[in-house]
Length: 149
Image (cartoon, rainbow, N blue to C red; front, side, top):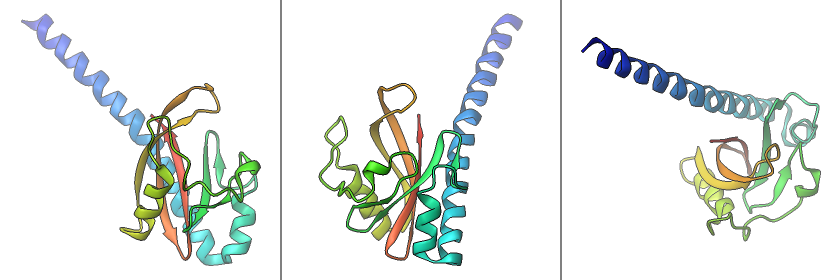
């Protein structure tokens, strides 16, 4: 009986550790987005976009980075892929056929903040992986940060 109890206790311990490991990146992403929102409000959109587009700026932390879209679905800041800036993403689908940018816009215009799940190429693994991005609307744009699951 003790072995069974120890076995289930170890499973619970591992499960709690895994949930904490997933919670930390989510919290980090949310904190980075909230920091970006504050920055936009403090310095204005134009100065904030310069900071958000800076690959060595304060909104890039390891694998996490803040990106921004206008409410029409055009990327206006992306610190790790400057080629995406100016690109209309509304008709881009993920590997499951999901129009994730349209969901970004609906979230921004609806509750004003939230998580959106989609599939995207992980720049580290070069594989399509499940991703979740947290976004917050600020003025006529939204800022977001994604994590791979």
